[in-house]
Structure formats: C-alpha cells, structure tokens
Amino acid sequence: MEKRISIGAHIILFIFAIFLLRLWHLQVIKGGEYKRVAEQNRLRIIGIPAPRGIIYDRNNNALVKNIPAFTVSITTYELPQDSRTLSEIAALLGLDPKEVKDRLNGSSISPFEPVKLKENLSWEEVVKIEARRIDFPALRIDVEPSRQYLHGRAASHVIGYLGRLNPQQAKNPDYRDVPRSAFIGQWGIEKIYDKDIRGIAGGKIIEVDATGREINSFGEKEAIKGNDIKLTIDIDLQKKAEEALRDKAGAVIAIDPNTGNILVLASNPSFDPNLFVRGISYEKWERFINDPKKPLLNRAMQSQYPPASTFKIITAIAALEEGVITENTEMLCKGGIPLGGRLFKCWKEGGHGVINFKRAIVESCDVYFYELGKKLGVDKIAEYALRFGLGNPLGLNLAEEKSGVVPTTAWKRTAKNEEWFLGETLITAIGQGYISATPLQMATLISAVVNGGKIYKPNLLNDGRAAEILKEVNVRAETLEAVKKALVGVVAEPGGTGYRAHSNLVSIGGKTGTAQVLGSKWGKHLPAKYRDHAWFVAFAPTEEPQIAIAVFVEHGGFGGAEAAQIAKAVIEEFHRKTQK
Image (cartoon, rainbow, N blue to C red; front, side, top):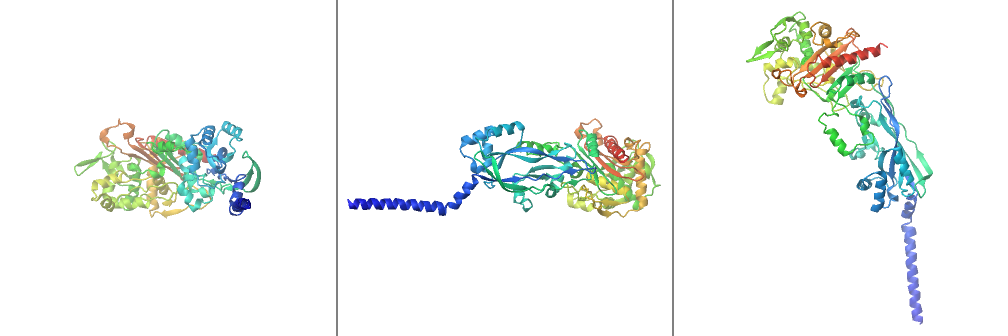
C-alpha cells in the first residue's frame, strides 16, 4: 500500500514538475514573443503618405492638383488564413480571391503595416466596407492624397505620370524612405524632380479595438508636403499647339530664342496621365505600349527625321561663310541637274529660271542648293550642321533624347563600309538622304540663327537660374542677317513657300521642308501613311524675335501647308498673350 502511495506521489510530483517547466518556458523563454503578439493584436503602424508638390506653368497656372482618394488595406496578422474568409473579403471588395491571396503572399512588409487591397474606392464602396467592419476587423479604410492632371492630355509628355514603386526602385537607397505601396514619378517632370516633389512620408502607431477601429494614438510623425515647381511652358500655347495638330502624328516645340526656355513641347498622339494615377493593370499597360500610334513616344526629342529643306539654312550659312557665294550670286534653275546618268530634280517642274540667293531660299530652289552642295562638299556642310547643334543631344533631361545623324565621308565608311558619292552630297545639301534631326534640334537651330549664333541648353524648369549657353557659333553677323532676311521673305513675299504662315497680327519668318517618304514617281494620290513629312521652322516677331518654333507633321504633305499653319496659330496666340 505504502509502495503504491509512494509511486502515486512521484507521479504527481513529476506532472507538477512538467507544469512548472512549461510555465517557465512560456513566461521566460517565450514571454517576449507572446507579449509582442499581444501588442500586435491591438497596435498598428500606419504610414502617412506625403502630398506631392504642385506643378505650375510659367504663368502660375496649376497643371496638377492633389485630391483625396479612399484605399482599403488589411493587416495580415489579424487575418484568418482560411480560404472561406479570403473569399468573403474578395467578394466584399469586388476582387478575385486569387488576387487577394497573391497580394498578401507577395507582401514583404512588416505585419504591423497594412497591405493595400484596393484603391480609388467610390463612396458607395467605402460605405459597404464600413458596414462589414465588425465581420472583418482586419480591414481598414484610409484617405490618401492622389493626383489629378487638370488638363488631361495637354503637356502629358512634359509632366509625365506616376506609378507604383517597383522592385528595383525599392532596392535603391534614394527610395528607402518611400512606403512600398507608394506612387512615385515614373516619367517626365514627375520623375525627374520626384525627390523634390514627393515630400517625406509620415507615420503613426495606433491602438485598435476588437473591430479594428482606432481608440488611441501613441505618437505621430507628420508627413511633409513636397516642393512645388514652376515650368517654363505656357499651358495655353501648349493647348493651342496640340489642338492645331489635331489627329496628326507629329511635334511642336517653341522656344524663347534668347534664353532656351521651352514654351511649348507638344507630341501627338499623347496620353492622359490620369490613367496611371492609382495604377494600371498589366493588360492595359501591354495594350498601351504596343499601340502602333506610340502615344508614349516623345516625338519632339525622340524621333529623328530628314529635315528636308529646313536644312537649306545650314547649307546657305556654310556657303556664305566659306565664300562660295555672296548674297548677289545668281544661278540658273532649269528644273534639275544631271549627274552620273541621273537627273536630280528641283521640286518645281520646269525650274525657277535665273535666281539669286534670297529668292533661292524664299522659293526653296533645290537646284541652287545642289550647286552649293557640289562647291562645299559634304564634310564642310557637316561642320556647320554640328556647329548649330545637330548630330548631338542638347541635354534636355526629359526623356532619352536622340542625337540625329550628320553624315560625313568618314561616317559612311564606318556605318556603311562604303565610300561617299557626290550624288549623296547633293541630296544632303537639301536635307534628304542620311541626315536626320529632331524637332528640338531644329527649334534650337532657328533660335541660333535669329539670336546671333548662341546655342542655349533647352530648359523646362523656371527657377530663376541664368540661361545656359552651350556654345556660340563662330559665324559672321552679316551671314546670319542675310539668311534671316531671306527667311522673312519665305513668309512675307509672293511666291514664298511659307506664305500660309503670313499673319496680319505679327511678322513671321520661317522655312518650309518636305521630307520624302516615297519618291516623286509615285505621284500625289497616295494613302496617308505614304505621304511626305512636313516641316516648318519659324520665328517672330521678325524685328526682335521672342519665339522660335519647329513644327513636324508625319505624312503631313507639303511643309508650307499644314505645318506652316500650325506654327502661325501658335505664334499668333503667343503674340496675343504678350500684348495683353
């Protein structure tokens, strides 16, 4: 009997020892962890996004504004992981259960920090979710600042758009203080100045009750609004340019020739940056980037085309500077010149007859410039093209700027492994063949012609800094004045190819260009996609130019028609505004 009592006592002592050991393990070994879990059940860390700075045009017109947006998030540590609960939450939010699960599984943030499930909620959705908060206390409705682009598509290639912080950016030290779910500038001005515009995010620790509602706060770091910035563009001129382009693909860029400040940078087709404000689905993004119209392409600085007869400005300057001709030099145009068994035609069938330097520019006589090309040679023409900013990026840090091509004999040997032919010099002299330029480069070229030979760095930020001169072209003032006088005649004189840009409001000078897509043998009745490209470069007023402009219209036909009228519309709008 005593033996059984002794065994029973030992068993009871053993069980009691196990309880004591378990209690010690829970309180001492696991105490900190369980305390943390208990705190998690009532504490949450909430990020507070910073309102982005406002972007203004040169006249202090707001181009964007911040508006409130409702977001629903979920705290993962409070969420039951059973599929039924996930399905019910998905149904409440109008989401696919797999999408909810993927978002939760893909989240690498702290369990304290909520995971966003749906953004841009309507007021009806907010009410519906709040009504079910007692069933799903892990859900949370937040109000965050969102972006609204006030002018839709206008200036979209300048302003850019927002996008969610991607994995690569999340690893970048520049974004270490940015919440993982934040939207940042991904293109244009929004991206270039994102660090200044986005501000500094805040945060707070809150205590919640069993339904997930906030009952107490344990400290808060206020978000700091981003800096406002002011641009050089004029939104009214920008809209005028885009309206004038209508449904045509092309670009319009207007510059203050005395500073390099950009007044207009229009590219068409464009896009509405409001589409990206709260995220865009992969399927929509795929359709967007694969759109054959290429709405994301900034044609003002990322497209390069033969400048056609607008390049005759360079050939003319080179010929005067090198003493090949004077302002009084005359030549006979019979409609073409023979070379190597081929007839290099002038655009005017039958020719211009005897024509001098000024009228050769006014009427854009090809034969006159063929002859200049023969006398100069392609390498000398290229030298002057490079002097005036062609063939190299100008440093506008807005998108990946193209450099264009200025061909030389050495260039062809390297690029084509071929020797240069004289016939190629002739077509280069009139802006055809291998040579290409961007609308931004052509606007800079015409600016330099009328400002005395200064190549300014194109600028979009209106921050009071002095204009930056990239270089000064070593060209005689008399040469520039002679060319400028001829360009005035292009618009003002009878027979001038740019007469359609003639204005009763302001004096305009300019040069047309028609870049061939198919040879002239195909005739005039071509489908739109095969028609010639249209150029027009211009400046106004002619006495003291305050605006220089380059217009390019893909498949726009004769440059003196549509392109010239677009330039006229923008220049007249500029004149009306400056006269107020």
